[in-house]
Structures are given as C-alpha cells and as structure tokens.
Length: 147
Image (cartoon, rainbow, N blue to C red; front, side, top):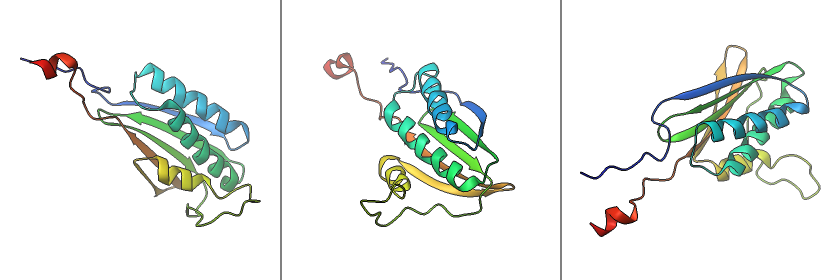
C-alpha cells in the first residue's frame, strides 16, 4: 500500500479579524494572512496571497467610508480563501484599462489574473469580495514512481 501525505490541511481552518477601515488595515491583513499560511502549513505562494489580500483590503478601505472591515481567512483540503467584508454597496469591477498616471484601478485586475477564483456576494451590511488560491495537485514522490 502506498500512502501519500496530503499537500494541504485535511480539516477546515478559519480565522476572522475586524480591521479599521483605515490605511493600517492592509498591513494588519497581510500579517494575518502570512501568519495563517505558516500556522496551517499551506503549500501556496505566500507572496501572492499577501498581495491579493492587500488589494482587496485597500479597495475596502477606499470604498467603505470609515467603518470597519472584516477579514476572513479559511483553508480546507484544496484551497486558501480570503474574504474581505465592507459596508459599501459599490460593485467590484476590474478596470479595463488604467492609465499609466492612475494610482488606482489595477488591483482587481491582479486579483482576477493571479487567483484561481474571485468574486463577491452581498451581505446584510454591504458586500464581501473574495479570492481563492488552490493547492498544487498531489505529486507522486520518487519512491512512488520507481515502484
């Protein structure tokens, strides 16, 4: 019998954190996502997860209006998921073309291109925008191949 170690956690992990809708929120969110990836021993690119989280939180701060943001990080056997809740009812729409001079407009394009899935859903207090990063497929070890 050949057994392979799972690539990611086999149980659901989740953490939630309320953040101020202020410029410090992105930094706090990046630290929390990085800590979760390490604690849960997730086999994904932590830099991608941190960057995408930062983009979603920055958008929430920009559109929230000064309240609080809820960051939810979850992990199951196949993916990491990050949800960012804010009080805005403004739809998240990737910019088709941001000018070279524009300081905004590229964040959702990054999320769209780097994540395995992204989207939004309405909540009782506004909306949540999320992304997922899938774990790499199980790869046989060298001993599995030689047998």
